[in-house]
Image (cartoon, rainbow, N blue to C red; front, side, top):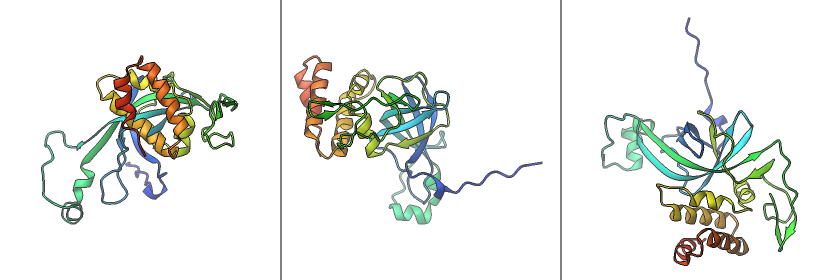
Length: 240
């Protein structure tokens, strides 16, 4: 006897739920974008943007930065070919195209949040909040639990949901800057461009918070061992 397959309403999906983990390792994972609700390309997270997944074993929230994005046909034998159609023409004449594409992205894990550990109490240091403060002056964090900016005990499991981080989450997580060391240690990718894109995104979310950017520049200078040419090239790409 064949049991009926469960039916899911895409409209019930959290709008921040953008992908699902399909390959995981200690320091990174690969996620595949979910099919869009309409005839359109799947939304792909931007280079340097922040995403969150989950480790069921520890209940940790796993935070990372998108560093590589690809889109390819599901059929690995036949390559996509140019059709010379506009997006609207594709919708009308080749609607199957949108379900035949496979957008994926790679995420560098930069830290995690343990919901079982209390967050550090915010304290004023040089006029800025310390610990998990979001910088909004009320001492509250958009993240529940303690933030650790190092690799978690385990990455997310296969088929775990991947969410785009909210502005509040990103601001809270990046109050401290230890994640920059993790990004600098990545290999096989345009590391400087990734750091610049990450800082640019955070700077935009913080509405041009110049003191935070100065702190980030100083922290980066120490990590780069006073390589001012490289530092200038990275910070020169950070703008609103």
